[in-house]
Image 1 (spheres, rainbow, N blue to C red):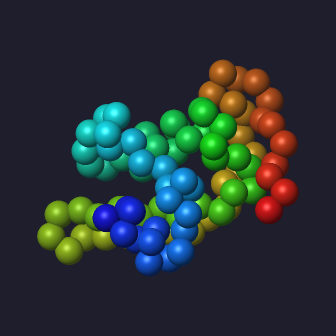
Image 2 (image 1 turned 90 degrees about the vertical axis):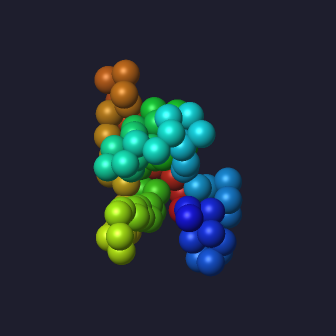
Length: 85
């Protein structure tokens, strides 16, 4: 679903964060786990525009677009520079 949505929106597949191959379907924890992973490995930085989309049982779904805030690194160090774009 995420790959198809990214394709429809014209988002480069390299920018899609998906950890289902690593952790499996974690239901309601999927988005927080993926955000933690992306923030921790540096692929998600302050100023990045983020689209979060989730699908649940039946026809349940939700989406939100946000700008990622400046946060301390998971190891407690100060955050790195914001991206240029």
